View 1 (spheres, rainbow, N blue to C red):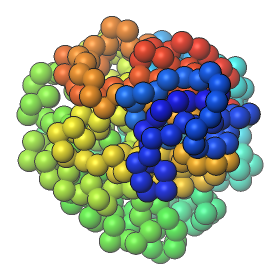
View 2: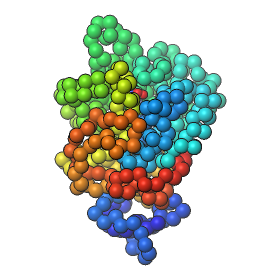
View 3: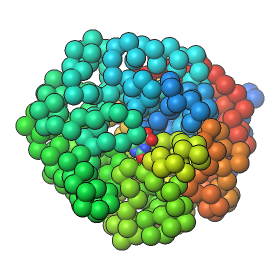
View 4: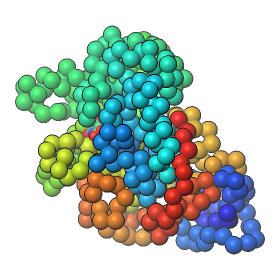
Length: 409
Ligand code: DOR
Ligand code: ZN
């Protein structure tokens, strides 16, 4: 396949060249003869990687499944996603990981990885399953994954292979329970205490930890005091706030960790440089489940577009987007053939129109959940075409083809 006249970063410079993909890999950049896909006017990003996605399969497939979720990923510009373990049953044993892998193999239409889940006592299962990454929830959230005692946390920190990413949902359970009793809501102090606890234990265990969805400037800085902390930011904590959007969305705004104040949201932008990756934390729930109090927001189909819009407003640079949404997740999760436009890498591309203005609407979105917290937002910058291992799978902003995804983690 040849992609003609695309603009893209190559070796740190913006170039306008044809891109040749052969046998699913980038083969060369230059001028090539023959038919191809015209990418004139589009900017090519490496196929994006979302390290934090809840696909709900198995067990909660009325909210999402591997097919609908990976179609949503493609529509949003992601060619690789990493799935979270809080499914039904949770991915906390070798058998449940194997089962999930079988389901994903049948249904996934983009590349994918599967995070394993830590429990207070699944040490033998971790050893047996040999997962490439693991998630540990320090505070209660959707599903039953909870490791809220220092003893089990510390043991996981020490036992889980040090070269593999250990992801943390950092909200301190004891603090959350106290805040509930004191009727203080689910404030950011629970996050800061969890971050402090985790980075100190990580230092003791001499291991890297990955803080999922950090929500405040201070939490990012506390995490980074331990030089081997990795920090993820989510679009909703950067683009939505409690005052503005909480009022508008009512119980649909419910998410853990919660949306913060407008002042904190603004401050978080000041920590952008210290953020290692963007995770959408795509956590789809049906409108009925949301009415009943479910926490979590869908995000796969809006994440990139929100950052492209921010780029157009002069708030973030394209190299930052490319790094935090492709290069850096590839590096953190050891996806050696992903995250770059370069010879020998997987031929995955996200072609965007940086200038197109569009109105966000869940009508026509691929996610099964059928709603978005960004309904009605007018954004500048849109995914137009996606190429997965040399195949055009999104065209005109729509999924046009399904090819089998491969497991990368
Ligand atoms: O709000 C949330 N929803 N936070 C999480 O950590 C999990 C997620 C979900 O799975 O619904
Ligand atoms: Zn999550």
